[in-house]
Length: 375
Ligand SMILES: Cc1cc2nc3c(=O)[nH]c(=O)nc-3n(C[C@H](O)[C@H](O)[C@H](O)COP(=O)(O)O)c2cc1C
Image (tube, rainbow, N blue to C red; front, side, top):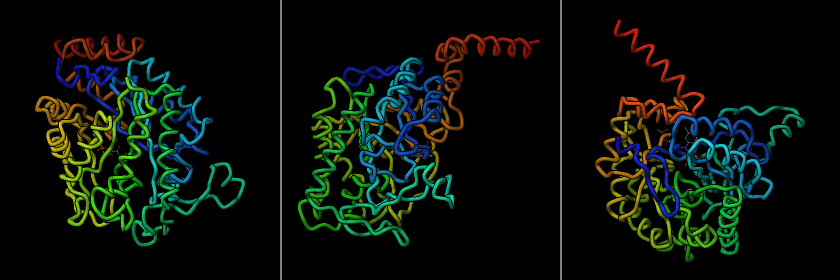
């Protein structure tokens, strides 16, 4: 069996293989509620053979959303619809995760696929439109033309730490197998970590130790309420790709400290601040996953322009990462794991990864095409 398709056990959870769907905002919610859209969007990845399906960045408070149309987990009202998605993912043999998120100063933005707002109030209400002043460690906007955020007081910071913990409790009630804390992409937690956004002079700013404080408090609070047998992931922007920003060695130190607090895997992304200089190319973030894995002796996920099954297999075989995550390639081909396994191991195993009502028929299709090729 190719190593990409061997199980991975973290605490009490065993994933059927090493493929993961990376969280992807759909901007398809009203008031943070999951819809049929999310069930089908996420369900097809479970049907397509992924080991772990992660629900998109979900606001731990209404102001933690990127836009008015983000998914949310700030209220118990959100639980039943999320549970329905979890149950379906489980029924297809995959594990279900959710990313707990706060956008900070990158909140209250337009929906990227619906940039023009309707003009009538009734239509605005129907899409749940609302806007707000974002919050951040410091009153510095993301870049020119973005809203100036309110600088958080220490009491407000404590409230946000509690919001992450409360969201984790809801994730447990919805039946998720693991949660991921979003510490990447220039969103709130990353705004604390990076000197590019954090200008505070109190215990949450200045030295690296101080800038890490909010992240460590959130991890500790979430781990306290998240069941011991369930894994906890954290997404890092391993580096800002900016000379004055957060660097790989900072991530190695953060990974060591969150590991001590009970994080099981670091999902290794990068960037998110204005002025980043990065040459995007296939597998360009894999060296970041390798650096964190070996530097902090912690499991990692590799993400970013990984499309080739042989490259995905190499990442696991060479010990660069423990999971291979896909976002856009999964949107393009929700059956990516099945197709990958067919290429890596031309036996029958790939058909068994498909749901039973589908697998036998696809096997018959391949056999018929093979016969045609031979004759
Ligand atoms: C439509 C879309 C939505 C995304 N939403 C999120 C998100 O909710 N949380 C997150 O951490 N990253 C998000 N990302 C980033 C992806 O998870 C991933 O890191 C990035 O797309 C690179 O992987 P890829 O080359 O496989 O697409 C999103 C990306 C896309 C394309």
